[in-house]
Image 1: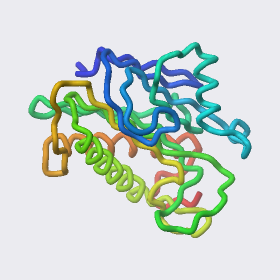
Image 2: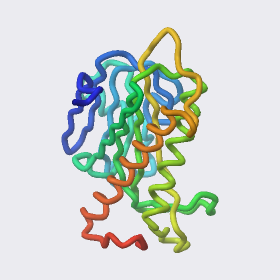
Image 3: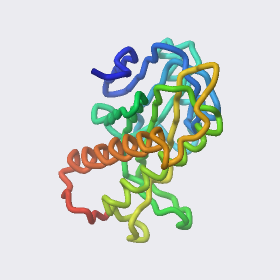
Length: 231
């Protein structure tokens, strides 16, 4: 039985929604609700190349779709071109602590960190949400993002996906986004480094969710599961 069973996940072709049973603090650079936010809802919206023409402002587009949906609360919002029906979830528990990671994966604009920015016509991103059972302090939330980023990068590196422009092994996409959410509480955990139980759970679930997402992305395109893939 999932520790997070009271938090409902609802998915369709256009929306993936996480309805939280209580308010959470979130830290992210998400299109909607980026920065530090208190919320009880997280959305992913599926978009296409035609949706995001150069003149379109992504946050404005997203908020307009939320209005159309009838959403009036402040939410955390991720934007993706990946199939929402192929979202991946990993949940792990140890010593009374619980972590769940939810990922959507698109690799149409895979890049290598440090490469010269170039205009990429394809869209695609890795959106990763990490949810903890206990309250995290602001500094611990920052550390959790660092651990999650490391796990995301490891998953991409191990897949040996190559960038199209330079034919180098990619480390992610140009628009990856990570969010950390933890329940509101009186006091919070201060440290979640890789030597801690929470750090281990964060890293393991983030890695597993992204790895599963990469495999689903390849399978949807009838691509080989071999590690080397030029996109």
